[in-house]
Image 1 (cartoon, rainbow, N blue to C red):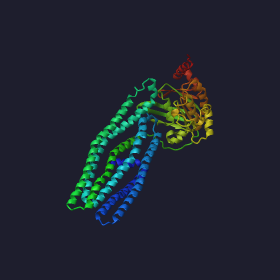
Image 2 (spheres, rainbow, N blue to C red):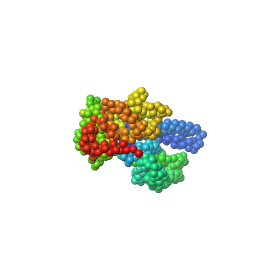
Image 3 (cartoon, rainbow, N blue to C red):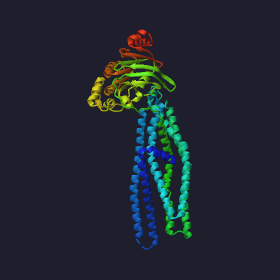
Image 4 (spheres, one colour):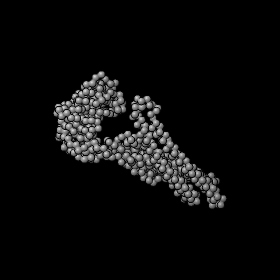
Length: 576
């Protein structure tokens, strides 16, 4: 229990203060809670004194009013602080993870790691933010109340207090046994929860394949199995807790009965007055309520602890060292010096050296898997090189802060992703400070203004997630408008025209020309018309530059590039 609470305190970050304040207020609540017992005591005194005095009744009323007001106010502030701390600590942690993700190498992300991150950010974090208030309010407040209650009873009568103390210790012992059992099963339950999220995420992503192959209702075995495993894990926890819950109940009920029996025994032996005897019997029904509330939350504490452990695992995500400086560059040239790069054990780029002059266009071609996209991603520092260095504007990319480096680079990907937001905001993603007129101007240059104004709400039209309600060519032109408005000196085009239909290709070429004017351009392309006018063409094969030069020169060499152009020309001239 102590370790779990330490984890919560560490996880709380800057919210520790509010938790500490809530605990102090919980102690005040416990004192006010005792006042109602005092009120009952004065009522009994008034009944048995038989002197027709109203004084005990008035005192009881005063204590009761103070108790009600005190408990209401302290409970309000205590729960408010605990709940505030809970939701804000998880919000802070989500932001922290989001910031960490920005500096994670792109190669880290695959279906499994995405599922883990999504699972932690959604299900696991929800478990924490919904459970921590229950744990803090019920368990810590309950324990504080139980301690204050027990101390008061010990002062009132040490014999009754001893019974309360023994029963409480036995109850906490049984609870600790249950917590140990929870420690064995909760990680399995949390893993099944994460696996369920991963599987459902994968299933949703692949829904078009399932429908295309008519596997609806048949291709979901993994989802069904994940649901079954999650149900099994949750049921195992509940089944394992049942015997301990019964033992907890037995200890407290026996404790209550023992208090009543002891009080009656002491009364008949003339060791306790009738008022104190009745008071002890009343106390026997109330004394264990708070510790019972605390105990019921201790098992949940293990769930919180396990959830925090899973969140902590994201701290092990590999990180790029993004500390650096903000540099202005005089020349937007790019240089590779003896660069090596691998994905795990697989060598992708091998001792590659290359100079890309400012305001020139470099086309990169080569067979699939030759390292074209990797080369471009290394410039943007999506990964760090194994050896060698990459210079932008004469400085190693590692010397730049990540924000400073990315300010100098605009990227247009083959697979365009648009956010579920307005078209205007999607274009402004390239420059948050851009005005509406800037957005329209960029859209016109990207040849997408005409189709945008025909949409129901023009630039305020909401785009579906990923741009689902736009065609491929329309999405691509919006992404180019986004890059135009960013106005970076270096532009990287990763097969930006690969999947565009002929109807949109001409418009896309005009958009690309607007984007790349007076810029240093690196493009991965397969279409002849896209690459033949490049200032230099780099031919990659197995991570090495095998040919380099202009189109005519490489055609005359009759090498890999010449073969590539021949195959592409035949493919593009083929007609039905």
